[in-house]
Length: 132
Image 1 (spheres, rainbow, N blue to C red):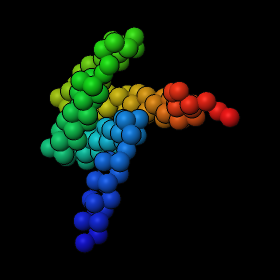
Image 2 (cartoon, rainbow, N blue to C red):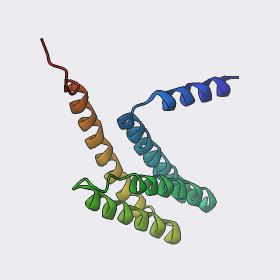
Image 3 (tube, rainbow, N blue to C red):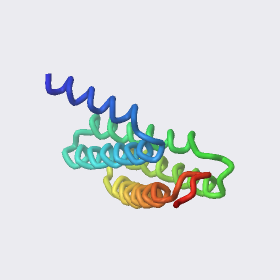
């Protein structure tokens, strides 16, 4: 019963979230899966590590697929995402945590950048609306 309520809450949260909120939620997910992958590698649970690192890769691939190719920063972000995927694959193959820790740190920094950008855009008045 509690899981059903939690799933319904999560479903509603995702459906009502704006684009910036969804992006931040995806970053949270990628970070969580990286941390779970690190934990699983530490416990020599390689099947679980593989599952979580692949889930993190899936989210990062989604970031790459949804980039606005007209934005100047998109080419740089695409290369960065490719690097993240490369490092996660390396960690998965070698069963080492260092590459995952590196990617996790970058993801946390990028998430914080998006959180700040989201705050800035929410403070700006809507287009065509004047104050006063």
